[in-house]
Amino acid sequence: MPTRPSQNNPERVTNWERWRVTVGNNIRAIRAGKGMTQEALALRSGVTRNVLIDVELGKRGILYERLIDIADALGVPVGDLFTEADDAKS
Image 1 (cartoon, rainbow, N blue to C red):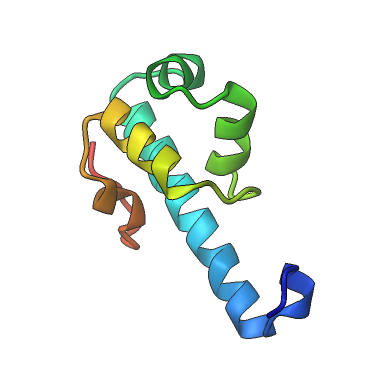
Image 2 (cartoon, rainbow, N blue to C red; image 1 turned 120 degrees about the horizontal axis):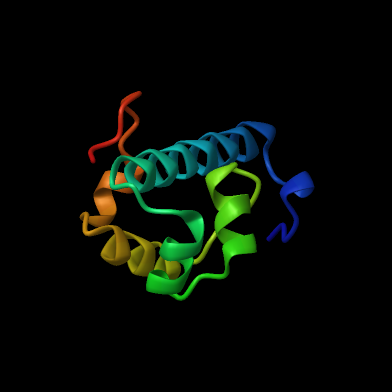
């Protein structure tokens, strides 16, 4: 079983990258729509601000437990973070 993204099927890696960007964009849009800073979201969710920055930029994957923490801190269902629409709910 491959352990590094570079050893995986390129289509699979591309799909992961697309989801990271989608989730990151949704977190940023929902957070901004609620007038919340990255620092405030980090404090409420327990995720460090540096991790949150990378997640919002789609540069980093994150454990699903942390996604649940972020969704809870934003007051939205975790599924909203995976919405592929251009506009996230606020």
